[in-house]
Amino acid sequence: MKKVLSIALALVMILALAACSGNGQNNQSADATEITLWTYPIGNWGDEATVTALTDAFTAETGIKVKVEYLTYADGDDKVNTALTANAGPDLIMEGPERLVSNWGANGYMVNIADLFDDQDKAEINAAALAACYADANTAYEYPLVMTAHCMAVNMNAVREAGAEANINTETHTWTTEQFLDTVNKLYAKYGDTVGAVFCNGQGGDQGTRALVNNLYGGTFTDAAHTKYTWDDPKNIQALKTLYDLDGINYDASIVGGDEIANFYNGIFKMAFCWNIAQQLNPNSAGTGAGLTANGDEIVFMAFPSETGEAKLQGGIWGFGIVNNGDEARIEAAKKFIKYMADSEHTYDAVRASNFFAARSAVAGEALDVWSDNEIMAEYTKLMPFLGDYYQVTVNWAPARTAWWNMLQKVGASDGSEDAIAAAVAAGCAEANGN
Image 1 (spheres, rainbow, N blue to C red):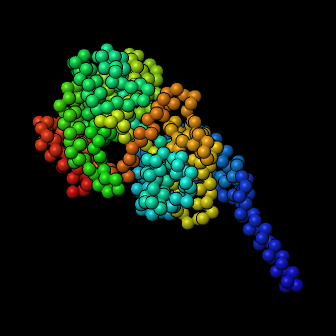
Image 2 (cartoon, rainbow, N blue to C red; image 1 turned 90 degrees about the vertical axis):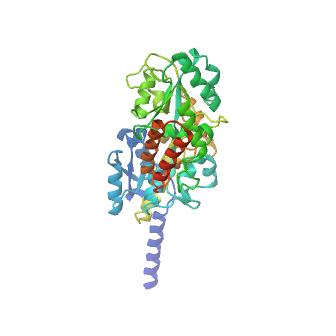
Image 3 (cartoon, rainbow, N blue to C red; image 1 turned 60 degrees about the vertical axis):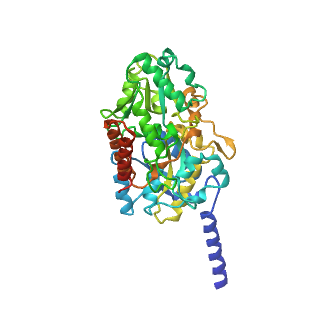
């Protein structure tokens, strides 16, 4: 009798294990599994109808239900921090490396998902985006889905009228420092007014001023390990002085990036240093159309100028991280969600929902051609290979941003001598480094 009971019990256990280990597309063990996703408003990943369509499709294929909470940037960080410290966080968070890697990951709240990246993934994912998702060689806290690159823009009608058209490569959207300086000089000679501004009333749009200064002569913003700020690089001082001396470029402590965009859109400026795909698609909500100023002039987006013409652009990277809630079943379900959205035939839809660009060029060797049907998006994709170091994960990041625009104000208010500019830069860099 005991032997019969033992056999029966063994059969029950085997059946139970089989039910829990299914790996087909309709994994029945996941019927009782529900995971939670908290997402910031990353394009239409902040839109309930769009996200519900994506998660319903995931549930239909895997049996894993997804409960979604939509965060805002106004109070989202507070909600996440409160939940994490109370051990009541979600299973997944969708955001960027500055939060998932250098904040919540560094503080022990996230799961190491380095096992999700095989060699083919590493080959297909943009190198800058991949690097930003790793805390060290063996620890990853984010799987990237989408990215974008910030750039600058020129009023092409004004450029033509000033006789500087030869400096603008509308095929590659790249140019050299020499071509940039020549264009500013010709625009100033033609119009005799502000061509563009180093805006510095606050941090709004500061990715533009950072990229402009760093690219002109190849300066750096941080060290490679993201442990300190390196604004006192002589190449940055050279760039700041060049801009100070350049007729048509003003250090303007009365405006931020949004004001600069408005001035550019309305024809006051002939260049904008705070630009990205959102502006190119719609420079102004009451505007004349994509890629046009208020009076219908053509807007051409450009990479920032460098001595070689090879820019290193600042960008945004967004993807998924898994909160370490101690529940292995939910962690595994969250990993399935990530691979479904970011490494499968469904990645096309997940990327389209973001209104940004795929962080990977292919999935399993098949090209991931997301925006071929949108002329502006397809053209803007040319900038993605120029995505530079994602240094927003550097320590002391928030205070450093404040120190940066304060430094620009001091440079603009100085006598413009190399010594005065160097002193302003040294003081700002020391402040950023907490010294």
